[in-house]
Structures are given as structure tokens and as C-alpha cells.
Length: 141
Image 1 (cartoon, rainbow, N blue to C red):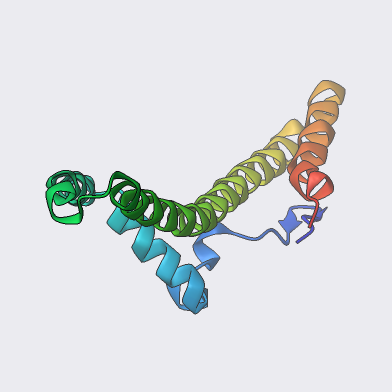
Image 2 (spheres, one colour; image 1 turned 180 degrees about the vertical axis):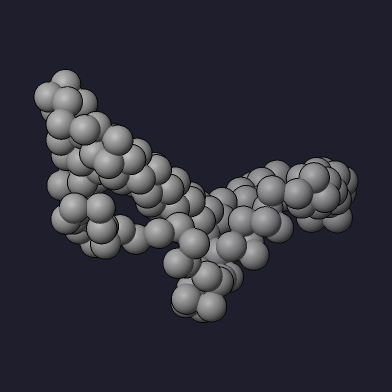
């Protein structure tokens, strides 16, 4: 979304405009999974999985099968968690950028309003306004 500023008005995407009701099913699921995976008890569950797996060698009695079980389980969990956590991280990065753009846009408007025709402040305001749209210009999507 392009950030354009005309006078003191700006049509910026404000962080407060985003609500959880605007998120799709996958985004909501990724948020819940991210919270789940970031808790200490999730780590404890992973440790418990390893502690249960280690003595299972005596039941399985084949080193190859025994290793294949843990390798497959951890690979599947890692593969899925990377996708879910990347979704959450990308949305968090976008939210931070929106907040920075809103702060920079507000600061530029304040500088313009209080500048009183100062050339140095005018140049700084133009530079700041240009920087506000920098994220939109660098975005590849």
C-alpha cells in the first residue's frame, strides 16, 4: 500500500487498523502455533519425546528403525513449524514497518507544521517523507 502525503493529510496503513478478525484461517492458526511453540512446556514436551524415544531402542531392537523414527518425527515437526513460524514472523515484520511508517509520517507532518518556512527543516521533512515510502519501493510483492 503506497504511503502518500498531501499537506497534513496522509493515507497510511495504521497499525491500529489491523484486527484479528481481518486475519485468515491460516494466519490465525499460525499465530496460535507460534504462541504454542514459544512456551516452555512445548520445549518440555520435546524433551519428553526424546526421553521416551531413547529407551524405545530396547523394544524396536533395530538401530536403523530406531533412528528413522526420531529423524522422521523431528523432520516433520521442523518442516511444519518453519512454515508456521515464518508466517507469524513475516506478519510481525510488516506490523513493525507499518508502525515505523506511521511514526515517520506523523513526525514529517509535525516538522512541516512547525517548520515555519525553514529551508533546513523543509529539506529534512522532504527526506523523511521520502523515507516513509521507502519500504513500499523496496518491497518485492
